[in-house]
Image (tube, rainbow, N blue to C red):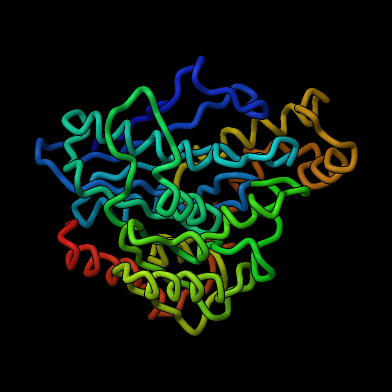
Length: 329
């Protein structure tokens, strides 16, 4: 397997003010043959505050084993909630897709067989692109940014009463307009141009209400968009690939924490962008004097691994069958 990193923006293109030297990037997982393969872009969650590693490498490995060349996107987030993200994360995903398609020979992928797979807030990034891809212009690449298929795992969908509040605050700030809230409430933005969608969530989800995926499924049905929807009865939020590696607490390399680590360093140094005193105190209490790398590594243990029911563990198999039914793989 070939495994390497690629930045998707050049320094003069990327201007998010709370990046602290971070540049959105792809970690590439390629088969080391010359066969052209379907592509998947994995977009981990993290409440738009961070990009968690628990939904990165192990998901890439799962679909790599299923014959795809896989890319994990580390996109723009903001743990300080000092600069509303708005369209930046979706623009990161849009640029990633255009970059991959424009370099399809380099990455040995089939350009018209590209799936995005998002988790929690990362699923909101994928869903936003799925319904608003036409709104994102990119002068560098003259190729489509529309995914051919979309997988949304325990997704944040709505900005209404059943939303994940902290994701919306990080995305839009505390003073979002009604127009912004409507635009990012994905169940209200599905159109006949939205690509096919696979959704799954657990009914017991303790962080994002299961009604989020239900609302999206209903919206897709009303617009006649091909979709599959699975609501598993048991399991908490954040089950990721739900495989043996997840059960062991082996989540892989925590490279997705790059921007988070830069941000916390600036918080501790008093150099964070536009940071309120209250948020600084919250972050110092949360992260303290322990290096964030050590905190991240603490999550890499079997003690923190969740219980995974056998039915939830089937979701990658079900997603593979669904992608085959679409002719994607």
